[in-house]
Image (cartoon, rainbow, N blue to C red; front, side, top):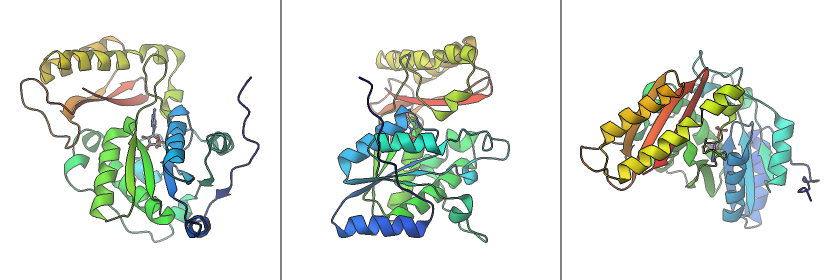
Length: 290
Ligand code: AMP
């Protein structure tokens, strides 16, 4: 029998004041609260975060906010997929208790002038080079969401592994009283990491994109076999190019905690392979633990 969709509509609030009033009620009842921030266009990866939240807390708030501050002018802010009704039904079915879906004006009122920046360290390489505006936008909006919702735990996907590290650093540096939890990446049957942006791929591009998880699998196996990081990076780049990926922003093997480059010789435990590459007009990112 198909799983019944939830009959309970998901409460939606659009202001910080309403969000705070509901969370305060839960807290007064002694309940633990989890937050799952998203940009919507939800897929099974997002819902796995909601599921984990439900196991870690009594109440789960999901947020949907396509944050203009983390898109550069030439990026896909306008085209980014949006569909709140569908998202709300999926969230209700996954056990979410509340959707916070603020307007841009609610998040960035006239005169908004403050930025949170993780200035050095984990924010610098990889996405920090390819998308220099990105982590400033992310750190600012996530700091705001954490202050607005005041959760005990907040869940972020390892799919955006560097983002998870940047948010951990930010929460620690600002003494935000929240535990930041990383959740494993949900993948399609061929290994491609689920992403809202996969919807941009044509059927041909989607078929070719399976070369990305295949290259990641190869890289992990080669590194475990004692392969040198530079050789493996070169081989991954060549196989992605051969499979039809155009621009490759990076293929880099780095330490999974500090994101520092590794020295020559066998890679140390805790290393990770990070890739960002373009299939047609779609930028795909992924990372695998060695
Ligand atoms: P986004 O809506 O893309 O900003 O993602 C919202 C959250 O979902 C972030 O913490 C992402 O890392 C996480 N996420 C996105 N894709 C996946 C996936 N395939 N598996 C697990 N988490 C994911």
